[in-house]
Image (cartoon, rainbow, N blue to C red; front, side, top):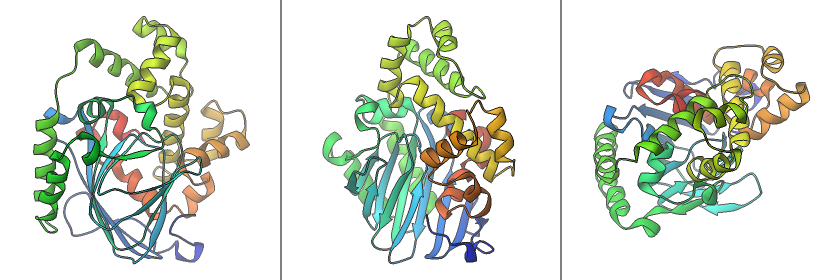
Length: 313
């Protein structure tokens, strides 16, 4: 699965390149895959995670992305399809809003591609889209068609900047800053409580979140669906898998030990959970992670410059 085969493992490793800070290249079997991260300015850090510039030069490229927060992806060049966990296949619009994903998602590019992407935290989701996140979970939409031509103008502006990634990042942050609006204090408080609950190691209990927020499990399910795209129990499973995958692939920890510590029933349960949410088995994460798996995990290198929810994995 993904872009690697075992005979390429020795050279298919994400390494820093000379294209700027936080820029990495993987010499994958299908050709080099490059990704550069940009941290948001301080005033947008509660709305958006990292911004990233992704390029692939192969005529055709396929890989798997892990379960993640929503993503706004502006297709500067290229196109293809997303294959969601339930078998649904959707073509990629030029201004693609990918909803929160609750399982690994395969994508296929049918020509060389350049993509400017932005990770959306719940507040950013409210700012740019505003609808119930669960209605777009494991789906996508054409944001320019649904929310006006500001996004089409942004895409045109980015395309006019050639390959100047720094200028493109500055333009994105300026436009996103113009589109954001403050949330009500009660909403900020709820988001902070859910984020903190999701950061809890192991299997956080819904009773703890209910006690912290003063809301019933039914109310929490409705609000978590609205802002995060899934009920608390599924979110807890998702972020537990993301944490474990990073500790396996980046920190070299034993997945068998993590299985014992993480509240999984047994090793088979652990393997199924990692495979479902990451798209790779624990053994593959250790020995032959795909190009995109490696590059996505490196989001953690942004450290405190992005929200904890965006870097925890």
